[in-house]
Length: 249
Image 1 (tube, helix red, strand yellow):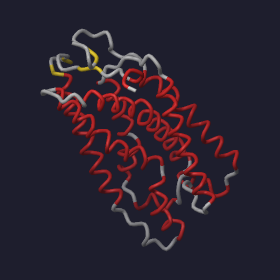
Image 2 (tube, rainbow, N blue to C red; image 1 turned 90 degrees about the vertical axis):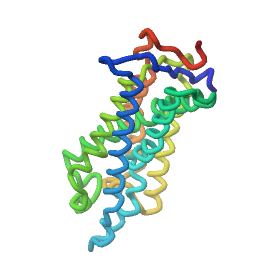
Image 3 (cartoon, rainbow, N blue to C red; image 1 turned 180 degrees about the vertical axis):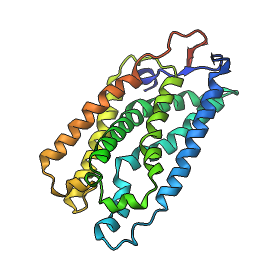
């Protein structure tokens, strides 16, 4: 696996504007993680079960199936992984950290970057056009407006900053990572479809959806996610002096 997927750089000796890139990343990941934890605590404590409208009360179960919830939960695990890998690089790191760095890069390229791009783009397009497409309008009355930016704007800024601050080299074989991305989209679409068949549509507009709508959603995921996948997997700052791949001396 490592030979196929490996493109993780060590950046301990690299500086940006006079500051260690490693330290900049540690500060950024810490800030992003704290922000995400605060957002999660605030939004998950919102109780919509007290509403008189049954469709609003049902949202309490549905929200765990939203793609926003999925990619933010992944980010809650991904950001500590980034912090640990970078913290170990500042010290005498154990041998297994090289594999963790590969895992970190795969998660970012195959899941976090594509899913965040897809979720944030589709959310703002539909939310600004008609919020009732996503959920019953009263649901949004329970949520502070800033939370929408925390979940769907800051999340995109976070992955873009990660992309900019992390030099990468394109893997020799990109197919496994692309398959991971397609697999994630397939699993999520099937989950949404099964939920619909069980009488619990994840999004409001799916209450009257047909099979062709679900197929269209899957194709839209692939169309939006594929460019962001290749952006995350491409060579980026790989030629800078002071960089070396794990295993290089």
